[in-house]
Image 1 (cartoon, rainbow, N blue to C red):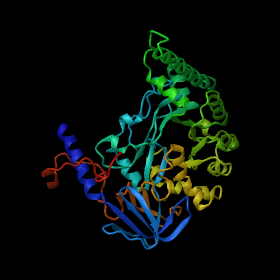
Image 2: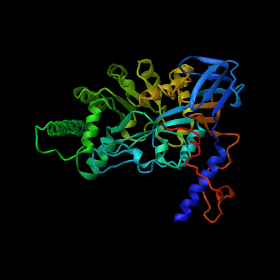
Image 3: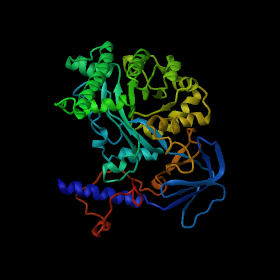
Image 4: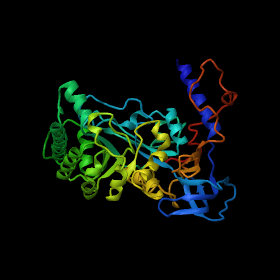
Length: 442
């Protein structure tokens, strides 16, 4: 069995190292740049150097750079998916209504081929989330799609703010109330679950501070759960909350207001169109589906105009996938807002670039084509909002991680353990990564 896993890892490196080549500099020439924050720039070059966007302009040159002729093609920032479960296998720690102590980042699978397929759809950053079985679930992980990295930590987006998953409605009520006969069994119980958890965290913190100050001789039993909840109260963790019904969304905003918590992005938020002004006034974000609903009772009251209505009311809105397949064509999902809501090209593209970046707290690094930002770039054949478009190259941190023309035709990880290792691995190599080769992690 060990030999099978060894062959699996070696073959993975073989595939990736032959399809993904790190370059010190990449110069994309003569493209139509969809910058998101600075308009559309036609027949313009963009230089990527040492993992960053070095410069944008006309007639750029750089000695030794790998040049890519993008004449007639569109270049946009890498797509950011604010709600995914890619890279993880077990989504829920469904053993308690509150499991703030667990962390998705402890169980990232860098070999998952869905990461490569996401790259094939232009997605360079995703938010791998805990599931919605718990009122307060686990902490999530913001990932760069550095496919082929052997170390799960290499996928972590360094410096990205911490996030955590909350959930409202049927899912935690069913898992705990219906199946386990423990609170919350109702929407009333949902509110009290949140209030009790925050109250207990504040008591724990008070007792710990008293012990550290010498005012108490007995320290409380250490609780990572309570420590995490206090980090939420202190504004160090952004809440991302599974939600559908307007009444419950209003309820949670009231709870957060009572505890002085301001950072929240409501996920799905199918009835957000009913309370868009209230969401905007609170400063809440919304990450929605384009047209998914009616798959369970509480999701029946929905509209494909949701994203447009939220946007027009000043709510920073994104469109997410929550699905490995849908993740590959988020640009199509964004384009639906032009059919339902008449959003402009730039407004539609913001839904999958700078807006989800803002929701994850990483907008200073990704989400637009600007000098100094991370070199996360996608080249499209055809406009990305066209049904006929096709992503042909995806670059992460200045490294080509997907190449429609040059990648092997079969990037699946179906390995025959009876095959001999490629001659390439009979030599002495010290590869740690593939897509990450030559990239420095801070």
